[in-house]
Image 1 (cartoon, rainbow, N blue to C red):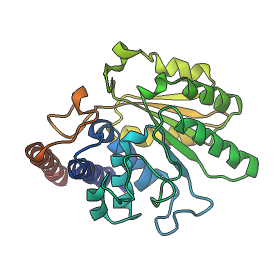
Image 2: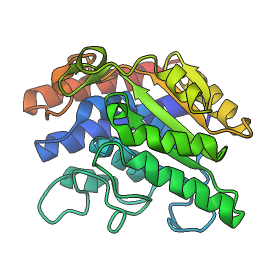
Image 3: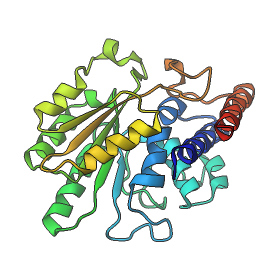
Length: 279
């Protein structure tokens, strides 16, 4: 896909996020929207995957460590063809397979159940080590929140990955600057994030605009070309990106829009899509 096609697809992913959370009357739109461009690039450009064969042995693996942003993952998976887009409206409903957090047993395309913060990166490191031990060439990607990296388990996993030189592992930190209780640097500052990963023998890519497709593409290309050490991509993003009243507003970390807010959000995204089509 070219840049415009990816941008349009990311806009559709955002529509799916807003639609799903609104239908559920619960969920986490802010961090799903900030990571929408990364989800889009991964599932439509970067990952070696096949929606018709979700368990193919040589597929690349993805672990959503910040599992509460499942609406973003589900929207990307649906648009990629893993399950019907209409099913997004069943998010968190009784009996729906689209639970509030990813479930590898019931959702096609989900490689790891997640939601308990800090644990997903450990699973991803295990997958990357498994590939090395088995001589397989699949790659492993995991997305963490910047609030999530306050968890100690994250750094145990990072220490192990760096020590074992897992260059088939890419850790992405969605650095949108906000967590459930406020700005990350006021709750419990993880900064400097880049220096911490460097200390654990990671190659670090500072992604100045994690919502820009060109920069995202360059970051993943750099990760793919890095040998002998894992890569950490520190993606500076905007929480709530694409929805005017959600952007950089901590209150939208875990709250669903009402009917009026939903209409405004979808109009914002419709206008963005139209603007992209005119480029």
